[in-house]
Length: 176
Image (cartoon, one colour):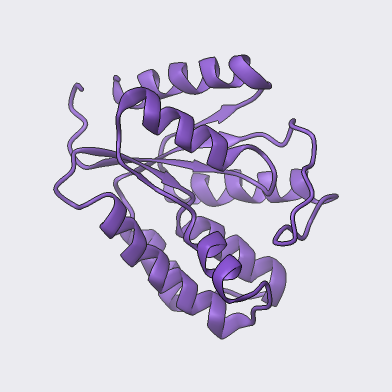
């Protein structure tokens, strides 16, 4: 690993774009610690209902979960989403985002992104809400990442083509 001190590779994008599958595959292949998507854990445990205050609480717990799964002293790790997902969630669901989430995003300066393009077939799931708005959600992810000035690469394709694109992107972003 060349010059990767403190980098976090965030796999992000809209619903049903292969984020979790890709994150797990890359973590296994490169033997890296990975933080799973906390919102899914929470909603599967406590139910799919949410309001603004519960999303804000999940965002706080998400940060704790990430630190537990990928400790600060670890040089390189993979995150299945980050606070940008929570910002977009709040913007779409509530037309606003709490300052605590915005401040958290500003502090995530060690993040680089693999953004999953929504070119995979939609897979229905009780926690997914926007089967017809995936392109809009993808565009929002790109816009939010650009606002931060952080590096990102879009990942497209299915199956091994998608995995190959992700491996190549990781090499470009962090020299793995």
